[in-house]
Amino acid sequence: MATPRQTTGQRGEEIAMRILQEAGLSIVERNWRCPAGELDIVAEEIGPDYASGEGDARWLVLVEVRTRSSTALGTARQAFTPRKQAKLREVAGHYLQEKGWRGPWRIDAVAVQLERSGREVAVEHIRHAVGG
Image (cartoon, rainbow, N blue to C red; front, side, top):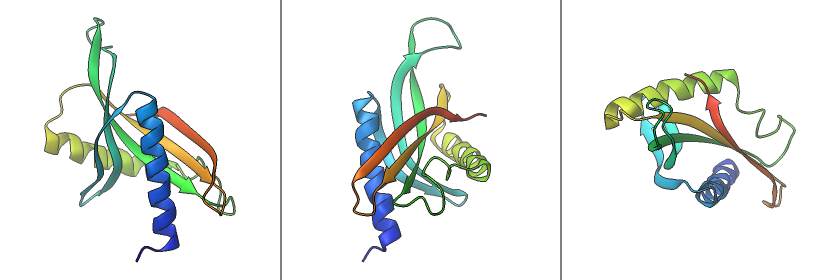
């Protein structure tokens, strides 16, 4: 049986997946794990190919979802701390190496703020949330 924290996290991930798909991203996998940590959502998106300057490329988008049902410990966006960002860079390196990804990639965040009842209060998709 899931704990209340797990239930809140799962609800946030479902909302994040909906938001990402509505924005045109394709979900590749969820909850990818390695010894260094976890990626909540892995997606792909077609976007500008900045390396060649010509046309579009398939981007790999590694997504961290932060969900809060209270602001007692801060908002969902505030939960995306520098320490968490450093951990995501580490986990991203493992993912890229394991999958042999050679194209463009980025780390996005989705901040989901809920009421205690589970109703959405705010959802924010932050593109390029973590720099390399």
